[in-house]
Length: 115
Image 1 (cartoon, rainbow, N blue to C red):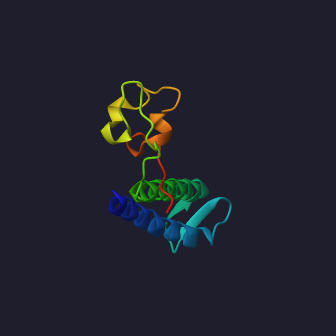
Image 2: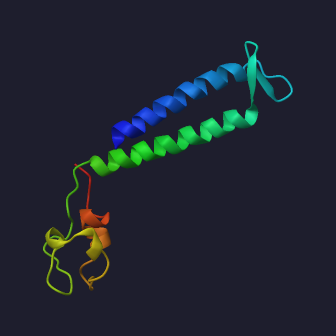
């Protein structure tokens, strides 16, 4: 997943570079690239927004790939299960006063990724 995200970012960065170079010669909101058809400033903004979104996707993918540790510390849900017995379909369904699967279990998006 990360490799695909990086490929997408590389493609967007190449496009951004080309449009940015063209934008350097902008006149009246129209950017000409050495006589080729021009790209509007809207195109430059759209590519920049796409690039920012791609960066966020890669950051999220990298965060998810870090080793995660459940933080239930012996706590169990109302049916007696700890995070070790959870799958994503159980998240939030069996919590009780000392157990929050969404906060404690990696499979539910919780846990800790700190070293």
